[in-house]
Image (cartoon, rainbow, N blue to C red; front, side):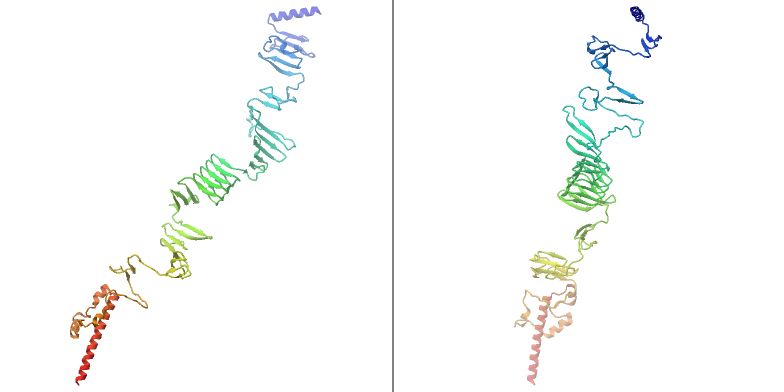
Length: 513
């Protein structure tokens, strides 16, 4: 036996000193060309050096392999530290099963770290799933049990291990929940395809319990409904109803349907609504030159605008036929057309103020138009009457109280006159009160009565009575009723004197007979 060992030692020393390959085999054979040491056997194994503790090996060489009996594991020195390759229980090994790999370890697995392994898989660093051959890409699948908790992904802060949020799939209630910290049910994806924010039972595709704010456009092909405020930094657009506690946008507000707002509607840009706007607080436009515009078929029709301290209500230039209409009690009342004509009771006003209907004027009815309080002095008018009233009784109609003239018809009031009528006048009584003397002066003894012979000559020459204007003057200038009445009275009194004188002459002739 000793001779065999000496022979083997001599062979090994001779092979090593000559850098030859060595084969240890049973039966004997040459070593593989790629191996420096080739141990072959059909019924024996290779037993590597065994140590109690790997750290007992002094100055280990890089690549040194030992079996540590304390850990029952194979270790290799990598130049700086010992690395475990596998252990004798096979519980830490990754094993192949066809094209698959598995690990029967009942504990936890760490990638990039060896401590604080309190979960089945702990990864220090990023994780990447790549599936370039799949149409839908890579998939991460979590299978939930039958309990209420379901599957859950937690996000932990490294500094203090506090919860940053979680993603939970609960099979019992058919929903996926995303929450931050301890704020439960912040985002809920239900099995019916609806998404809820701050609600566990969403009823719409997006159901938000609270305010909505977007830094850019909010677009919906159908309704937008929120129990809180809807706020966007850009455009808010909905193909249907917009409903919320408030509506605020830096950009455009657009709804092709109804806007039902329980709070304020605030916009610093354009707001467009194709349906009804309902708000129980108000609609605010903060821009000093902002407009509340109304359009049909994409064309602007009318607007409400603040211009300085003035409020403008109007129609756009492109709306050539539209009127401004005020309505009360479900009926149109006041109209203003494109030319500025205003109508009350008519949609086609023909003048600046056209009142088409009303009551007949009386002491108790108020006609088409009333000026003044009903309990004081007032004037009422209908389509053919003007009445002055005083607290329900007949009042005085005063015209040009501070001077000026009054005329009826096209004829101008002549200079020096107060009232002119271009046409005929009929009345039951006219009273003219003259400031000059009435012609009683005819009966005074010093009155120079024209003799009849001289009167005859005047008439034959002038074709009119003395002191009476001739026809051409009357036709041109008219007559003054009071002055003419005075002159006619003068002629009547002169005629009376002529008759008295003739009666005297008749009486004298009778006496001579």
